[in-house]
Image (spheres, rainbow, N blue to C red):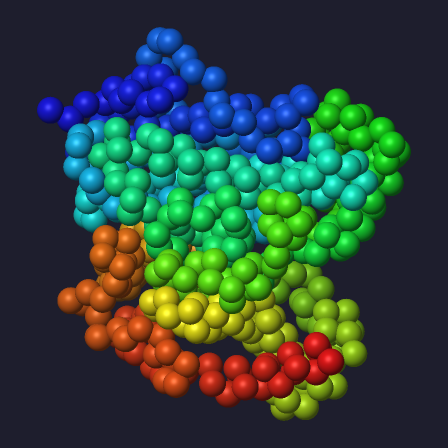
Length: 495
């Protein structure tokens, strides 16, 4: 008989059963990264003797509340540095070897958690007979402050603590998931936004090799890794803001976390993230993947049609922006490339073009680049684009960033989701298709389902892409014109 008490290598856990699905929450996968372990690689957790309660989510990683994340349902009411915990959903803690999905949340590397109501694994477990794991990892200044060049060897990997936390969680899965009815040899890592960017880094991260067999990247790829030089400049700015001498980094371990967060909030967006530190990440993920680091990993990757809309719709800078203001915003973002981009894309410098260019630059182009690298290695790749448009805010968001998440998870009925997706019953049609495609991919490495048209593997001749919408279809090279224009612009950028 299936049970709610499971024995891990560290001790016994008491979970709960709800509507036929078993869940264990707040499971430690590393020691609390506090005190002298701040800015250090995670260490294995301590064992415990009694049965540990695993029916409540753990605190989430320290972070500042952000309006956009609140809109996405991010809850920061319970925050602590002691945050390295994961959650497991399973059809049963038995000896079946089910596929395992490990979710890495998004939030620009500074926000989010594995306990958002969008990431409830019950539907994947019940409908897909898979085991789902969601994780926390250190964020922002605690997860990605690169101090190696300033503080020497003891801080050698501080710029990738957040990624090393993800690796530690994957090691926990290898050691323990069989007890929850999962197969440690059939693990898919998946994530969205910074979570997908993390997946892209893990594809080229030496210590993650062999810990997963498949990967799904939603609105993120392998382009986001800072050079050591750039990351050191960011760290120097932060130390100056905190009035910490480079010779006295130990002071950082004693500071209240609120003080660190406050200083980090002054940095430009995406300043803190994975780093090519030469130790934990010896090469840029693109270089590692081009060299075959993930050649045996099947990939499902895609983007949303109008990714960037959500970032400007609520931006006061764009509200009633006239031509002069719009031009200034373009120049602030694209600098001397504005005339080239304006010429290539032949449109007025307005919010619509701004959104389109940043959707290509941050999301579409990196996804195509990663797909190309993997195809060249002979790895199976499937590409999608999410085109379903939300009607909220008079349709201004369209098929924007993060909109696909509750469709993939089949969590459209969770609290407040209608604020983002609207309430039309037709949403369910798209969710059924995506949820099953993800289940099929993690189960057998192929996302094709009976509800979808035939979805061919991605290749560089036809570039077949599944367009998810009320009537999903496969379109060859759907972004061709934009892709070619951006490739030309990218060549100029490199020159």
